[in-house]
Structure formats: C-alpha cells, structure tokens
Amino acid sequence: MASAFLTLTTISIFFINHTSINEDRAHIHLMINYAFEDMKLRCISARKLADSSVFASTGTSLPEFTFEGEKDMYAITPEDNSDNIWYAYRIDKDNNLVLEEKPTALDAATKKEILIDKKYKPAIQFEYIPGTEPNFLKVTISAEGKKLDNKAASDRITKSDGIRFWFINVVL
Image 1 (tube, one colour):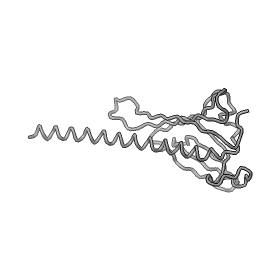
Image 2 (tube, helix red, strand yellow):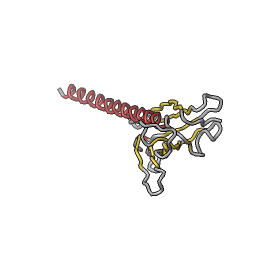
Image 3 (tube, helix red, strand yellow):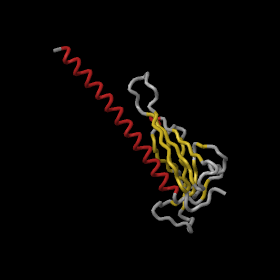
Image 4 (tube, helix red, strand yellow):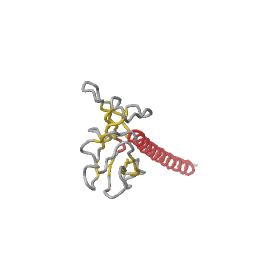
C-alpha cells in the first residue's frame, strides 16, 4: 500500500511540474505574440524615426527602437502631425520589455506598458539588413521560462518577425 501511494505521489508531482512548465511556456508565447502585434499595429503609422534608429546604422542590430506615430492607431492621419506621439520599444532599467509613450508636449508624463515581465529575462533586437527589402525591419524577441530542474539548460523561447513601414521612406 505504501509503495502504491509513493508511486502515485511521484507521478502526481511529475505531472504537476510539467503542467506548470507548459503553462509558463504558453504564457511566454502569448506575451511575445502580443508584443509583435502591438509593434505591427503602431509601426504601420510610423511617420518619423529617431536619428539613432537601426536604419541609420549599417548592418547592425540595436536593443531599442524609437519612432513617431499616431496616438490613435485606428485613426491614421498621415497629413496631420498634431495627433502624433513618440513610441519606444526597449528593455527598461528594471529589465522589463516595455513600450514607452512619450507625448510631444514637454509637460506631459511618459506612460509605460510592460510587455514582458523581468522574471522572464526578456531580450529584444531590431535589425535592418542592407540590401534587403526597403522599409522592412526584422525584430527578434526572446524570454526565458521555468526549467524542469536547476541542471537543465535554459528554456529560452525566441521568435523573429518582420515589420514593414508604410508612410515613411526610411531606407535611402
């Protein structure tokens, strides 16, 4: 009876651990996909890029991307700049992957949305490869999930996707 109980307990613990790890991995996939969808939605209305943009550097990748775009992503007005705002995707000082909204008014406060929490050790890279399609940016996001045990290799989840810009000609 004790042997059967011990076996049942061991199997239960095994399934609980694996379920927890799979839930964690699914959560990371959701956060990464949300970050990509947010970028695609905001970048489509990009009107101006920061001077330090990845498009300005040749063949390198950068951990931050800043651009000016529409405050209301569903009301794109390329001829009207008064409703624009500066956005930045980056890893903040607390090691979260964030979207920062920086209003053009000097007295307005910067808003920050955490896209991937620091506990997942997020990383992001923006890359433009000269000679590839113009106005196309490759973005790679990764985050680390739970490990089955401390000896296991890192459970890093990485996804790359592309973002196209429509209202600016960023590549000369």
